[in-house]
Length: 531
Image 1: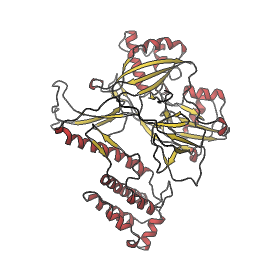
Image 2: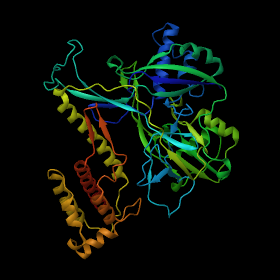
Image 3: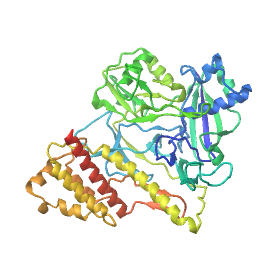
Image 4: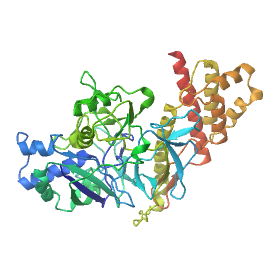
């Protein structure tokens, strides 16, 4: 089957809304979903056929837009700077040293725990960047540029902000869009039947294409071009084939994947990957062991423009999930079928892409790509609006820190057998005092945790208690947070609305969120003891 490579350059910011953010903000995905590409092609198909609605009984319509075994619209991921290739999601089994910061001018060693796990390895942390590509003998890690714009609600008829009926406080409401920035290049792929290539050439002939939401507000304008390849491959192997055990299979999800359990319900159980692969190619893969699974979950929805309604939200396995099968093999024909067809539901919208034995090295070197030269300038903000803009930037920064805190808390679960509720409550109380001071102060917690101020029993409880995931002593972790409050805030977030308005993490804000983290860890442990 031929592959049509669709290159998309963003002329305006793109708003492909995800489930992140709060009710007053829309946060875009880090990529352009395949469902959005499919919807744009459907719009051009209707114009080409000069009809207002699709005929769902028509065999051509079903083949082009609804049958996963015939046509698939893959997600548009960032294009790499060097090779101009479509990047791919980073595997969840890639870890870096805890305190290492990946930069464009230095090399960082990264470990693939799906191939080799060593108890003596230093403390490791999962990589937060989104996409990767192999360039200049290094793995380059990519993340899309984003733009945050502030908007206010206005009445469509009056053309200005006004109160809505029954909502007296609605006048002047403010919301923000966190969108993919203009000037970036993404690439999607349309996998289709040979008989449909000529039709797709006509549908993709016009370069100007609008994608995503809020098009009337200056979002969504892109310029596209396409290329047809008959021997396209979604990925290039990283490492030599001789480096991987012939009796092991490494399955990596290259997009979010929708699977169903035995009862037909959507499920994020990664062991279902084996059943999904067996159903596609008739193999007999066994159930993978827990230590060979590196997975993450997400929620998938969408928006039906014809209905004007959102689609149901369902859980899915996140892109980058890695599962290793021991003593298992697949025939070359089965591997090719999996690479072409994918697994799970909604494969025609880009879900369920898989890679077999993609990454084949236990360790490798990574860098970030050189920063591109920016050609656009952010508009300046008037002096009267600067205080309001600064408050907005600070609030957006706090939202990012709240998300980082939640992520850190998920991996900071204590073994609660050695510490009493009274010690956890004292820690929460004293941290709360430091949080209520202006500015937030870590001094009271430092005084409380000094060895001379703790009884022998209390000190032993803090020292014997460890984290489940890392086995790091609770007392040592607390001391590290007090000595370096910004140590866990990596990468350090910042918000820049203009040249004059920026919000960064200073010592006071780092102390505030470190206290919140300490309180949250202690509160979480208390709840675990109650259970």
